[in-house]
Length: 172
View (cartoon, helix red, strand yellow):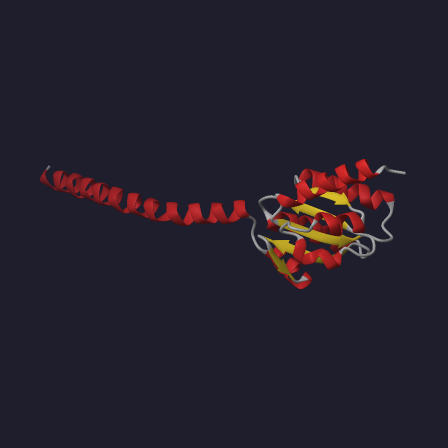
């Protein structure tokens, strides 16, 4: 059994972790097998997501005064929390993909950029393109204008060269 000092240090550590989190998903994993849990942990580790099983009483105390406080009441039953400091879309994609194949893995709540979102919105979020994909698309759009301009300006010189060459050929 843990001493009061150990419990307080665990509470402070968890509270410190929750203080820096803007994106989090609470999930229920009741009835999952060890191999399913290992599969999930491998997927979240690959995506650089923090995933941990939490004790509800400790978590309810730890979320006080943090961005996760609005979902305090959702810490009931078997609870795990997946957190990420920056990209909520990737986290939602990884967890949703796992949930599709494992019916016992169920979302309880979510917080994105400090705002509570519905469980249905997590699925919508999972279908969005990731931050990297959006940046790539934006760079393509920005680059396409410059690319078209370069093509048009080079066409003028090319066309001029063709006309001059044909004029020289007619004079011969």
